[in-house]
Length: 251
Image (cartoon, rainbow, N blue to C red; front, side, top):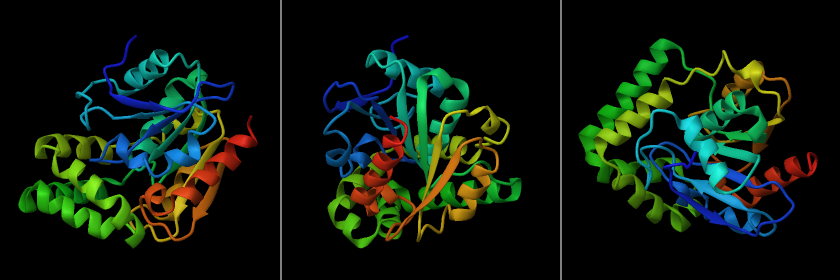
């Protein structure tokens, strides 16, 4: 199956497994640009736009579209890396298509939200985006989410991506994100899983990673110092080094 998702492919075709990168809610493949110099020197890297984000259309079956991206790249399997929403999708793909996923790294992700918390988070997020409008919402998101270095280097680009997202598309993606419940499928994930936590992440703190780990067969948890919710942006070199150390033990 050919995927309808957009992806930016970089790095050389080599004997090393490729990497599939999945972004967070409201952003797109460009959130990985600060990491790419540290990841794509020796392997193919596929940075996707998830359904309803960036240049990708909406889709009913995200897992099938992601598997199709690997088919399009000629990749039998890949290390799958996701941040926030992307980490949730990476874990779901590993449970659904274990033969296509060599390992998962999920950063700033969660297994599920209890119903009162889920409803409250969704309502607050959508109401704020609606009340501010996507332009002012994007300004606030960048200021509140990124560390100062990332705010300067990546903030303007990410702000424009989020500001350019239609409100209804963002609300639809938020509903999907906050409705995540991975608990039934976590025991089906047999590949190694690395759970990364930004030390200063108040949105998905270490307890979220620990909750995911309780359902997994082969989990590891590592903390990224000087990083918040989007650790790949706040500390790209440290984030990439954690990935490389994890993969080297598997390859």
